[in-house]
Image 1: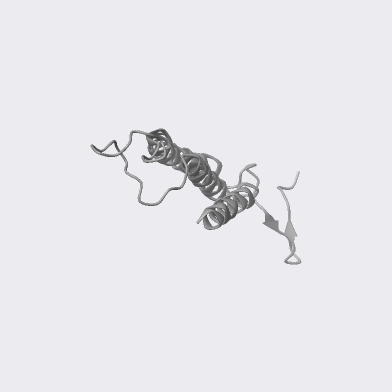
Image 2: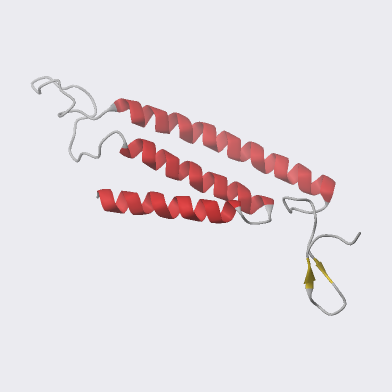
Length: 126
């Protein structure tokens, strides 16, 4: 179980970093979202992965951390999910406004041009 979770965190992080390095703003936003999911999984895994553990204290069971799940990482991840959703919505609105004003969705504001020969030219002519 730990190996699967570690692989999932690694794949989400590497995919997020790859998308962060892309030139379009939507890809950057999706990269930030994937990295936030990876961080949420990491925080959740720090609360110990334990199968069949009681989420709260139960009568007749010893009141130790060995018998119950840690609620703090769960609360932190739940809060991070809500905040991450709001930030993603805000980023999308800012991206749409920026695209409307600049006419392009590139991060640096410069569209790739195609010259007469059909070759891609980076940036705009000066």
